[in-house]
Length: 170
Image 1: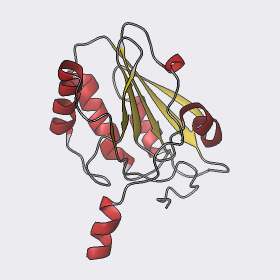
Image 2 (image 1 turned 90 degrees about the vertical axis):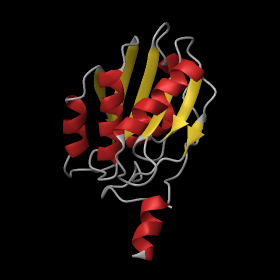
Image 3 (image 1 turned 45 degrees about the horizontal axis):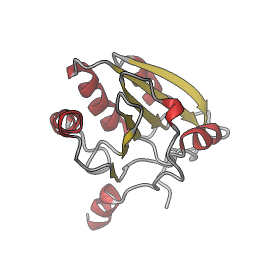
Image 4 (image 1 turned 90 degrees about the horizontal axis):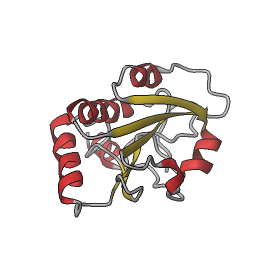
């Protein structure tokens, strides 16, 4: 029991860099989430993102990047889920390119840019591995938009983007 709790609350590796402003869309909030095609932990992150996008009336652009690990031929449940999220676009690329472009190493990592193209948040959307809480995510996003002065980063709980089996790294 203790080892399961430790696994659920141990975050993945943080990004090696923050993506540049070129990824943002001027005049709109831009949300970019990087996902492993089948990390079971990421389903909660995608549901929380979907709740945010569904509830917001702000001009927003969301991109979900499916980072395909080298040689990955397994299921792609998260990509199928991402295709159904309103106000978002699914982009598929290999994990190495996603690492070079975004710096993210853990599935479910979210980058949020404000309308001025400033990166205002980099991190996860869940308090633990697979912990879905859409209401908290919506309150968090509303506070980020309206108050601005909330945490600019948080741990990401998910699998390694380079894992062919969707396992946690580190």
